[in-house]
Image (cartoon, rainbow, N blue to C red; front, top):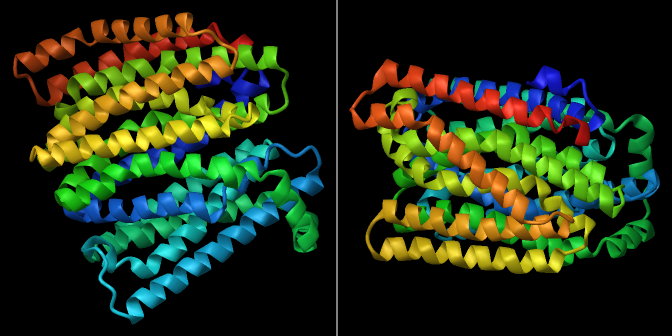
Length: 477
């Protein structure tokens, strides 16, 4: 499918380049996970999930969201000024967090148990994450998608190898955190190659006056986009933090691995589509934006519906088979979270329409409602004394809100909602029909190799169907 797609058009070819790089990186992580989930316990993965939640939320703040403006300037000089502003903000705010961490440690201030051992590593996580996302957007501006692809492989390789090496002597959660940091460094080293010596000199020569000018020109990003992105990330990471506070880190470990597996399609394809889609629509007029949005959405629905339905049908058996019985409960979580993450897969790449259409304030309102609703569902589950019920309500509520967000993005992208809803409903129904053999085997109590063969065969069929759907759309994107 990827070879066929790469021969048609710059959009699809660029997506394929990024997808192949991301796929290689994710293949490393998937193979590594088969080892890591036996070197580290669910409790240790839960503590690591808390650290990643803190870094993910903080990484939005450290750049002040200026990196998202990098594809927009018409001149390279202005773009380099934006780059310098984003890097300066990242370094400064990370250093400030480091100072706060030192004050907390020096004054014996009580912090959550899961974060106590990792407090000193938080500023480094923020610094490396902020720099990586900044240089990734710079590569997007240059259409250096090959470099982005190599960065994904380097980051995945460095992270996985480091975590395995550190897990052998049983370093615990610190090994997972240090491996994550080394992975970010590996990705940054590759990305920084897009900034040649002349550009580095231009960045160093940026004046305070020019920085103030671009800061004012793109003030919507820290004023609105920052808070919208912060609320979005907080709503994604809220379950990790709330589950750690209300239940225990074992539940967090199950949830974290579930989301990691279910976000695999978004990681493999969605992030690649998002980068290329943003680069394309930021320089097109409205009719072309509508056509591109329509074709991209339809392709994502065709590709994502089948695998997510399979996870919803057989998540528990799949997790127990691949990761071991200790992770079977994570498979139950996957079955309830699959509808939400399908909507994330088909919608997230389109979210850059918010920047192009300058709808940051409306985005901010949506993210605030999403965070409040997710928090309410998790607290309700805790009040009822059931982590599983909390996850179920979280998944259903998130799916409903993301469905509304999807329709809004399609509207501001110039696409109607009736036809997209038909595509989504049709592809889910077809995937459910193709999953009937798995349902029959599960009802009959069949497990192990026979079930796995049936699952692989079903996945192959749904992907072949997706190939035909996407093949008919290549000329439109």
